[in-house]
Structure formats: C-alpha cells, structure tokens
Length: 112
Image 1 (cartoon, rainbow, N blue to C red):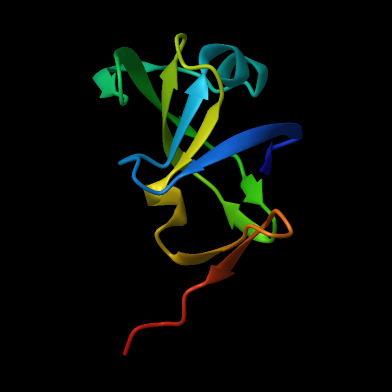
Image 2 (cartoon, helix red, strand yellow):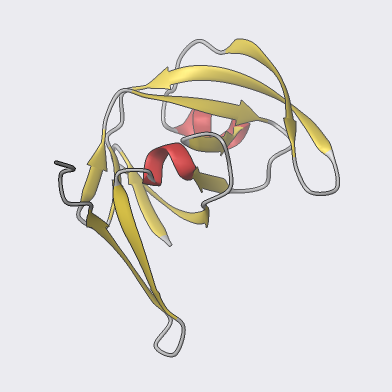
C-alpha cells in the first residue's frame, strides 16, 4: 500500500504479525535521511534471519489518513521492501476488501 515518509512516497507491505512498527531497507532509510543506526540484533522471518539496526525516524509516516511521527524503526540491508508492522497498526482497525482490492485504516474508538 502507498506510504509516504516525509516527502518520499513508497510502497509498504502490511504485516499484522510483525512485532515492530516499521522495517526499512537500508537504501530507503538512507533516502529519507534517517540518521544514526544502533545495533538491534537479528530479525526473524519465516524462512530466514536478517541482521537489523534500530533508529528513530521523525517522519511523519503517512498511510492514508493515518500519520505517525517520531517512530522507532528497524533497518536492514537485506530486507527488500518497507514493512508496516503491528506496532504501527495497533491503534487502528484494518479493513480489507479483497473483491475491490482496497484497504482502510480506521482509528479505534477509545476504550472506556
């Protein structure tokens, strides 16, 4: 789905099972001017493990009407595309219309 990071428009894959906010390929991180990266160990994928770093990105990250700023991200030179993970999606309801190939993110109502 389209994701804008600051002035950079890219495509992101949603992964509601990923225990991160975002994973950025190193080239995308460099393009948005991400700054300093600290070691974060390994990231586990279905069939492999990749080394990752972590960094704070001011953003904002815009996914449709949703905007997130000052987000901790993972960075990996071996990761092929932007991943939008569960931490970024946790305060939103994700609606998927397979027939019309549309996705909507809606704010969750406040809990009482």
